[in-house]
Image (cartoon, rainbow, N blue to C red; front, top):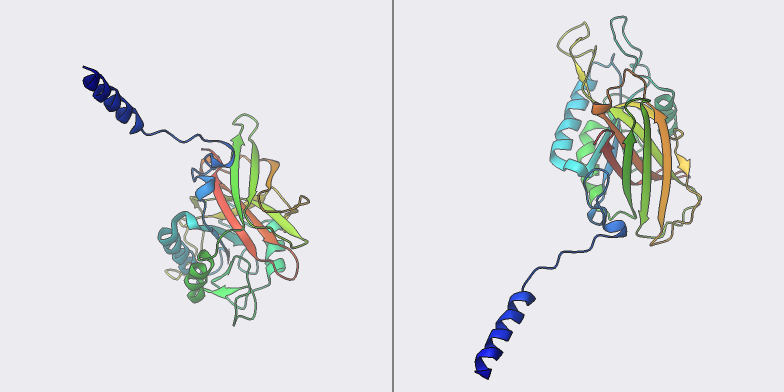
Length: 281
């Protein structure tokens, strides 16, 4: 009888010992604003494409970026900046995609020799004369940047008020490796996709009124070169910053994204990590 009782107790013990105990989610183990677990966030690369509605070759560059986004998924963050000589709108254009921030960023990273052109993580790669890269170089340098571990992870928590159209973005930085550079900055951009408007293409000498523009820089929640981070960026630090912006009525919030990235601002302008989320989750 005692043996049967012992065997029954042992079976009950083993049954309970095999039950899976769910993890306790606390602190930085929570979900990021874009649905990516912050703890698992990998290196995310920023590509800034410089373009314009009067640039006949730029649609080819934009098409390549769409291919690269399909290949890299959330590991690549794209922003299309309408600035420079090809950016003034046509008389038939519905929108003027130029922004003061876009013009300032173009001057900040340097004018290109030709278009299509883009900057990858604002890094000057070995063998290159400047930050601007022709489209044949984009894929290789994106792949190179993806191999690096992020020194900091970025969480973005958006809050959009439909009535006032005020957007609040709480950005939390999780520092994994001490960053000793004296000038590190946080930049926050707003992009919009799915905008139908005129664009010159190789198919015709007149602009295509049905062209769909994507990842268009609409504005920034920080200065064009970012907001200086005054807190010490020591490993293990968690830093929160909150910014607000009232979205103009013509921006379709359901098509907008918040793009946040951490970059250096001295002789090197390297982007250490980028991340994006939808304005409306």
